[in-house]
Length: 543
Image (cartoon, rainbow, N blue to C red; front, top):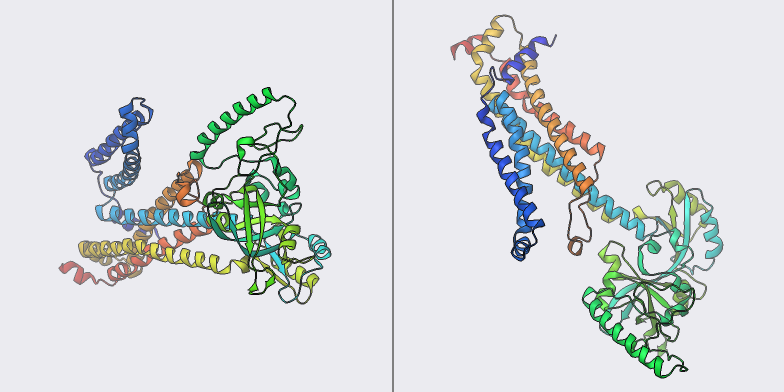
């Protein structure tokens, strides 16, 4: 039934004879330039002379950018050349437009999905999936309630917490932070704090007396060499002192005077790499973020002051409350806001500091399936009863993820304009084809071709153009996304706070791109096809 329209569509789609091999000259030129760039880059990054190293620093990034641009041009120009050699020039332009628009949509949407997935992973890693609070009354009966929550199906961890806003100050700087009292024994089952703490550890919150003799390692590279030199000088002085006074007892060093450090570790006690050991008075420990440690220039074992506005009442009003703490660990969450604004202390110390004896602010829970929290929320609300507020991570971060969803939708709509540009090209091509082939259409109708068969023939022509352009564009887009996910695109972690460009391909989004591009291409051929089907044989023969 469709054999005749398909034959007509292929007749207008494919050239009668192939073009000569000279159409490959632009591709060959680009391939030659790419090989030269590859060779120059290899010599630039493997040369050992001083001049080559200087050129590497000056032109290395530019060479990488030029090489990436040439690779993209080779793919695009090679694809267009293959089309032009076998198809008509206007058809090749239409297919190329759909090819570029479809590939761009797949890559952009996959990168946006990668950023959203990375943000979601970091938020769920640094926060609980469900939070239970009691806003109107003191939350005191939390131990029994936590045990009941832990027995709910789907809950894998529960921990109490106390939180408040304070000021933290060091000898060089101060900053406003959110202090959070945690239970070191159960917080690891709810958040990734234990895994993210790469210097020190939560064991110092449980046993702060271990911090009396710990200082270091430095987290600043520019101070590291100076610190090692100072330590070697101190070691020589200490050896001389021990030789002159063999029976003398080592004196405890103060926190700000490491010249009298005693490096004799107790048997069986393992310290972090590069740590010094000396004796000080015992103060509670605090876990801080890496960025906050850089701003305050703090090391493991340094002393800080935490100041709370909720102190006692004096003659002039409320007196701020201050208490010394010692850096027990430094964590890296992967989010700049968390690394600069959050600090963690033990739950008993937080209750004591904020005068909340036996009270907490809430209970945090982790579930097995973060996307399916609705039945668990209902069960927790039933157990908690009235007066308690149960919220999951979707409610807490609703505005953030709603903004990301709207941004992705708007980006999809904007990228669809690229397909619309290609659609206008298809309309122009179809209109020019009708004007050019008017006599042939008239002859076909004179021989018995119906209006419907002419309409289907031109619709099939648009379907073939849209299918080839969309399928090839999706294939290239998927290949680029796979390469980015497999090999990675390095990023400056100091600027973007991630090491590589995150990419996540969503099958539903790819299917939506395919359906949208194909539908737009098909609709673009509707008017030229209708015009061709309405052409009368007499009018066609007069042209």
